[in-house]
Image (tube, rainbow over all chains, first blue to last red; front, top):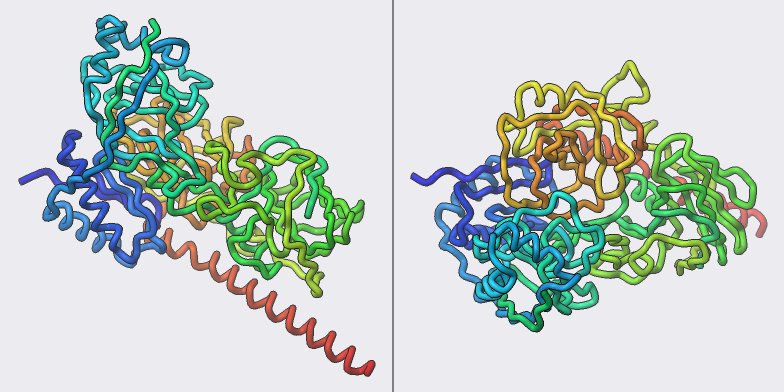
Length: 218
Length: 336
């Protein structure tokens, strides 16, 4: 029998569901299925999908948290994976240069020359696993493990919005200008969030992203 | 309309927050002390989510350009209207041109200037709250500056001279303390509580945690003896709400608050209950806080006195206003 999910209360109005085991896209797709099912519950007012986890925020404390937890477990065990046919974004990147100044650090960590790091980066297709941390910021799954690079111990203080970044096994495009601990390897003019648009976030979970080099500055 | 004459950093337009967009990475923002804003809006007969000015730094000075009924809640401070001392938590009407000055608090940290009819700023994603990280909402997504003007509905109520007892005077303290300066809060153990050593678990409840200067609307960083995990863990990004107590690798906890990120990755040891978040919002830097373990049922029950306080205030305001109106009606009738 598969390991059981972990379910916990975060205060009186939020419940966190965590899938058991390692990260897999199959688990992430089951979390998306769970998100869909939870959306239909009348007691849920907000959902925060995370990486193989889901937070439910209730409009009022649930009468019986145990009953909600059992419902979640049942849904988890019975729902099929949800395959989201997301949009495909093809995004041009200016690799290297001052806006991608951590390219050297990624090279040093991977032991690969810059040209290889760049071609490995735009050689993969990425999936938006979750959106969060900053408005519109997508956690991208699909980074080739060869160029995975731990977050920096000293964050950049003023990283530009649109910076193409690597943080551990995840990739992304920074959503805001400000402090950021991920490694910058390039830049795109794309803005991932606009509060005046509906929806305000460019990406949705399940969207796919391909990068291509617009320019390379080494 | 009002004009800001004097302000320093970090005073913003806020309402009860921007729920519904956390799945897109947009935190709720909103006032730190939701109770103080609700009291202000009840006193003024406003909508519950009408926007106010949240004060975090003082003095703050504004000029009413039109006659406006207002109240200042959240703090006890020296407050003057054209040099005349007025009381917090009380309804007052300013004439056009009068200047309101709010000095540093004698008690509390965050003051709320609430205006009858609310403040007119564009509604962005369903809220007037300033989202500082995203640079939207409130007034152009930024803190207020001297010279700014804010549009108001500018309502002068015909009945004034009433107010509310502050929550701190009505709602019982969480614990009777030897040291009255310590603020007591209730918290529920959270997801990763069991991952901490038994000593760390005990220390969470026993330590008078000091609120460090690295504390703001995003969260409070606490200082005290570090809390150790039984063994290192690597967590995947998960949803964050106000009140969650995370423990970064150095072991000193952070309480996430109104401007928290929507997701985080540090171990979660506890969550300060919703009923006590206003106490935390009013705790100043340098203050010590003690956390008291509470169950889910106790956390839910703790909202009852808070809701009863607001309900009673609603009734009191309705009574006062209707009886003042009937007294006024009788007077004019007697004259005729």
